[in-house]
Amino acid sequence: MIEKIPCIIDTDPGVDDAFAILYAAKHPKLELLAITTVFGNVGLEYTSRNAQLLAGYISKPIPVGLGHKQALVVRKDDAGVTHGSDGFGGRYDTYKEHASTRPLHPNSVQLLKETLQKSSESVVLFPIGPLTNIASLLLAYPELKPKIRCISLMGGGFHHGNRTSIAEFNILSDPEAARIVFESGCPIVMAGLDITDQASINQTELNRILEIGQKESQLLYEILDLYSSHDRSLHDPIAVMAISDPELFEFVNVHVDVETGGHFATGATIPDFRKKSNQSLSQVKVAMKLEHSSFMDRLIEILRKDA
Ligand code: RIB
Ligand code: CA
Image (cartoon, rainbow, N blue to C red; front, side, top):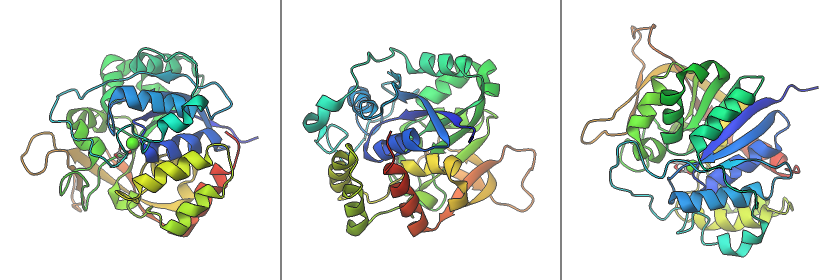
């Protein structure tokens, strides 16, 4: 009997978030305990209702919590148009009848805390949006860190950014929160743009989503079709797969700092690859390489399963 890994997804759905959430709900090695929402791709009202829509496609009742609606330190909001005005490529209204009708938990940080306390095992946290909720949890309840098995996040990148030349959206959306998480002492696994931009899909692969034939496949196809006209990379599922399917990836261990000041580099995730870097500094397990066809095949294989 496979021992399932208990996990929580903290998310700003968001098209690629949708794939990550359903992947985690369907994966035989994972037990999705809760979904906590945060602002990001779109405002909190939309990310939360999109999370409820996805929860409606999952047979097991999954609590959904309402998280932070803005960063710890507010800068200009620039979610862009990648995910559409409703976060789901304008398709929410077409599919809203499937949404979960369970009431939202009013506070994601409390839901995170309660879920960690209730779990008999340590829990993997999958932040795939801005890190505001996770930073708040770590600041408010540091005594719960031993219940966090690791924080496997989508965010950052060493070679390039996507919102500035060097900053990635999730980190730049709340650099202070990201710095709190990276300096927390919790084990961190990072899926940054260096690897997630290897998970870009072409039209043939997009069509494979439609052929899955699950009840949510048409929704996933339609929102991905719009999203991919702006960004072809399926970023968020990589953070989940780094834990559920680590054999698909190559990792490096390196100290990472988050720039919270600066002019050109605010939100950058800065690795210390020096040979003589201080080994007492925290090390992050960073996914750096994937084999694309194996990634796609595994994604489709798991999405074919019932949620
Ligand atoms: O930079 C990509 C990340 O920003 C993904 O998590 C995407 O959903 C957006 O939140
Ligand atoms: Ca996201």
